[in-house]
Amino acid sequence: MIRILRTIIFIALIIIPELVLSQTLVDKVQEHQLDNGATVLLVERHDSPTVAAYISFRVGAANESSEERGVAHLLEHMLFKGTKTLGTRDYEAEEKLLRSIKTVGQKIDSIKNRSDADPQQLQQLRDQLTDLQTEHRKFVVKDEFSRIYAENGGVGYNAYTGKDSTTYLINLPANKLELWAAIESDRLQNAVFREFYTERDVVHEERKRSYESSPGGMMYETLLATAYRVHPYGDPIIGWNSDIENLDPDRIRDFFDKYYTPANMVITLVGDFDSQTTLQMVDRYFGKLDPGVPVPPVVDKEPEQNGQRRAYINFAAEKQLLIAYHKPTMPHRDDYVFDILMQVLSEGRTSRLYKSLVVEKKLVTDVSVFGAPGARYDNLMVLSLTPRNSRSCTDVEGAVYEELERLKSEPISVAELDTARKQIMTSVLRGLKGNSGLARMLSSYQTLGDWRYLVDYEKKLNLITTDDVMAVAQRYLHVDNRTVVTLLRGEQG
Image 1 (cartoon, rainbow, N blue to C red):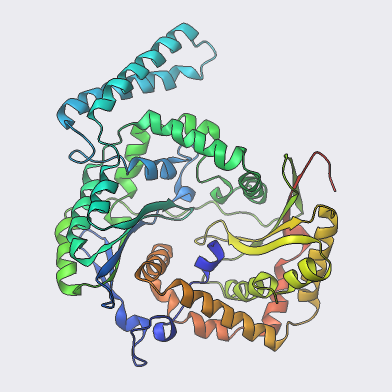
Image 2: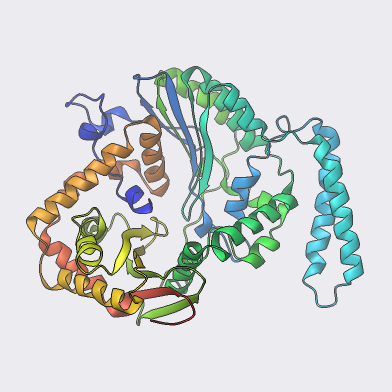
């Protein structure tokens, strides 16, 4: 999925059905900047009376300090908890209780990790917190945002946090667009982080479920932590256990107030509306927000890897193998080449790895290649393989490296290159038929830098030659640039 996002590219002559040939994506996308710094992207599409509404922020897990790991992900949870008017039965009374909950919760956090902590005092505080949280429930109206949207025809109400950005989205009837603006601007201006400690426990359980009890999650987390020694791409978005357990409501609030602001915000609307009146409406609701400050760039730079790294995981699950190579990110020319290279390797039944490892040698049951974990900074090409029960990970590795050596020693065929380009464009077309797909594409690339990166992507992709693919394979797909994670049942092999 990440790789498809990375290759969501284009010029609109092919992918946006309602455009005539004389129009391009540049003609259709209207970009505006509000006085407080918020970027607004508008695309009118009148084929159905709906609108896809995305709000993205140029802040993600990579922007957290060592004392903030997991903040962006927990904020994703907290921003569904309501505001001073939504999600509460009596905010004036609730606010006093929330202050008491925070005081006790912070007191617990301040002493629980101390070697001289009094167990009896700690238990008394935890009992007190439980009583306060029980009393607080009578003020809470659960899932009020979701209920309002659902009652007004909204679907797909969701959010996702990545390494580079955070996005909140909804698809709704066009005549409910002002309702969206009212709710979302209120959420940004008056968010109440109610049920903080309860939700922190929920995230802790999510980590156990998605990483510690999941072979796939455990392998992926181990891969990133092994491949990255300096850059925050090596840290999990959800945070480590010790991070989650010590997340503080004041630190969360400071992070939110500073970065979830117009200076880092992209509002993308695609659908059935009039751009001029919609822009005025957006400005009326979002233009009053305080600008905030731009998110500073990550200055940590991952040093060149100078030797193969390996990690083994003993887990009661079928064998799995992850192999990763460091690579540059957009808009580096080699990144375009990697899009072709990864397509040639694993997309479809005619791809090299599928034909060789699945069909001919019957070594694996599944193989995929994707880019991870982010796209703003140099990232990884990851190969994921599931060996057949009777086959060893060592045999699978050897077969993979044979195929990679072929890429380095002989150019791919012109037919393979052309097929790869067509497959990329087909994936784009399939993903962008709806308003939400286009909104997601524009929002993603604008938060990464500039949506106009998409405009000449196809032209640059068409400039890639078979010799370019071979040169990139030689430059990056070597043992010193490789990280391998193997999941086994108690034995290596």
